[in-house]
Length: 240
Image 1: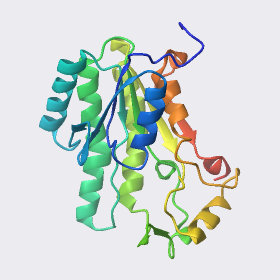
Image 2 (image 1 turned 60 degrees about the horizontal axis):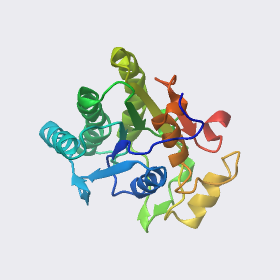
Image 3 (image 1 turned 180 degrees about the horizontal axis):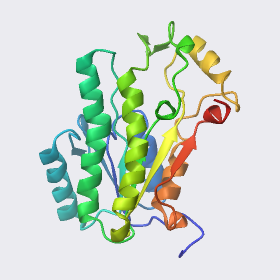
Image 4 (image 1 turned 90 degrees about the vertical axis):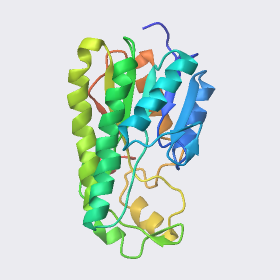
């Protein structure tokens, strides 16, 4: 361990799904620590990337290596939700689980010793949803819900993380997971109040409170940490 700080100066960090709710927060946090951040997203960012398309992933990796010479940290921040329909099931699994797997493989292929891959999961990959929260819940004026495919895919991401941590250990590439709880954004007041009542810290997370776990797992402070899952949920799953 070379430093008691994050020390991410000049580290090349790739963030998928970077144009979503959390991507900009993560990018801001890493840039503040001196990292070179490439934000990718199917809808824009610094580089367009479709995580469900291997050719798109390979092309993005090739361009990043050509431009930056290396990839030190890869953060799988992308995600999809939907409804309970079978078509939504297939797409959610394809984005959240298969897309994460494809990105992990592509990143590990070019990473040097000491690389760090970080996957984003969800508390609903650990515990079942409390459906009493959702009948009248809204996000940005639209009904909220938790489809089975979302829970299944995020549980899969947690298991996939453990598997790849073992698989990539001989390359000295670490693979870890961060599992956020509910993040305050545009939910209805009733949902925020009901959800917060179930959390030991009595509130939802602020949008900038997940990035700290990512910074830790990306840095040499976690040089002996692989295959783990850091839960950032205000204690909700500790009480479940």
